[in-house]
Image (tube, rainbow, N blue to C red):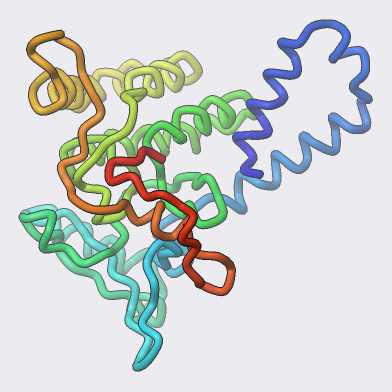
Amino acid sequence: MPRWALVLLLGLAGAAGPLAAATAQPRDLDSLRRYIAGSWDRLTRSNAGLLAAAPDAMIREPKKGTKPRPIVYLPSGAIYRRLLASLRRELAPSDFARLDVRPLPAQDDQAAPGLLYLPKPYVVPGGRFNELYGWDSYFIVRGLLADGRADLAKDMADDLLFEVAHYGKVLNANRSYYLTRSQPPLLSRTVLAVYETTRDRRWLADAVAPLRRYYRYWARPPHRIRSTDLARYYDEGEGPVPESVAGERDARGCQDNRVVILPTQVH
């Protein structure tokens, strides 16, 4: 179970009242806190360890031939060369050579499955979810702040703001095939939670422009429905989503035909 989920469970246990608190043993809580403290780092991905972040459990590897290098996309345009130089500094030359680093194509459907670059370290949910997820990150950030990891929480908020600035929105997750969709909008609450801990007013001011851009993403069609003036979830892609396809395979990679795939399923 991811650490952030355990943090939430602890919060729910605390809300259950005095009975739950009275039955908890200090030794058990200390053990749980140590597990949580150690799991943050195990679930953290960064550019220095891109070889651990880039592999994708959602996509099947070819059965024959040479194993392809994992694709990592950088934002295209003027920023591309600067970010490429930064990656070369962060990675060992042997590690960089094992990656296929490319500029992101202008058209989303022209991008082969690959990891989308983010500048700061981030915590992943774990298991086959080895990416920075949109609304998962809000709860992870709250857990980090509660555990005294404000720097890492701020890094994650910066990554989400980077997604809005360079990929147009907070993505379902930072893979190229997630460019067609977002998740329930919790970015403003994420930024506010970080600010309430750091009180960094300059950082908060810099967050205003991407926050406004993300608001406009939800406040206009196809997300905004004019007849009700409400926003809706809307995936601009077609076909089954990769995490559903991956979820219907067992440990041996066999298909389970009992699973129904929804084209616009939300993780």
